Length: 304
Image 1: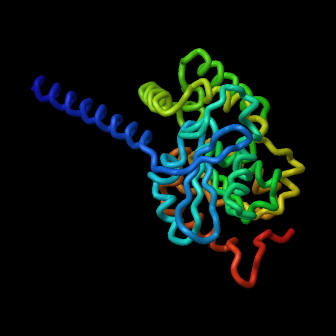
Image 2: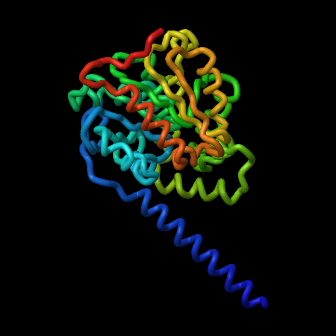
Image 3: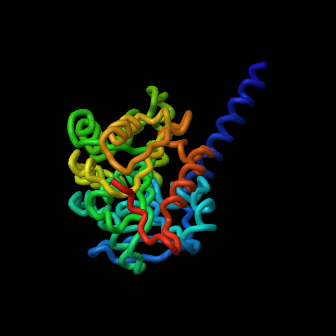
């Protein structure tokens, strides 16, 4: 009996180690792409498919393939759209400055710089988590460049109170080489077990330069927009957020104050799993199709 239990335990642990190894290898493997210069910072990108352009902006601590390709989003869109993947500065194959001033609003400017580099005047922009905050910033910063904006797993947040405390805790932890626990706990609907926190620390540490990750968060407050900017929005916006995602609270404020905005809550989706749900794909594709220009209509800006 004891041998049977030991065998099961060893088999389980062995499978877990193999699974984690495969996950890390999958995350580190990258499809080839190109680079462009973003005011002195080299940014990695890849273009697939043809049609109306859609820029996909990934979340914090991952890369474009891990956020968008492996869950199937690229495959779902490239049949009808020109899909543009970007590694946000500090992530993936893009440069990783250690100066916080190289992040913040610069991450939003990079999207417009990439459009300029590709000779594209307007595009849909879809962002996830941190990429969602970048997307919301773009609605206020350069609305004339957007056909539509789809912030996912993110909402309207202000750099104060608990948000500032979370940023402080995370950057101090990274500067002490103690990991991402503060962020992991904040994004879970219920307190996560310690093994999960440690596993995420390991995976994030394997993927990232933690000094750059700290610099990203030290200036992320520059992505915030004001209530006035929110109320003056004229870009078609769709919020996609899971019902179990703590960042869904900020979507409620957008529903109340943001014109040209609609929201879909993905049932049982949390901060990680929302874009794996069928409802995520169907709502995203329907919204992009609705706001893509055709021969009779050149602009998709919503009416006030």
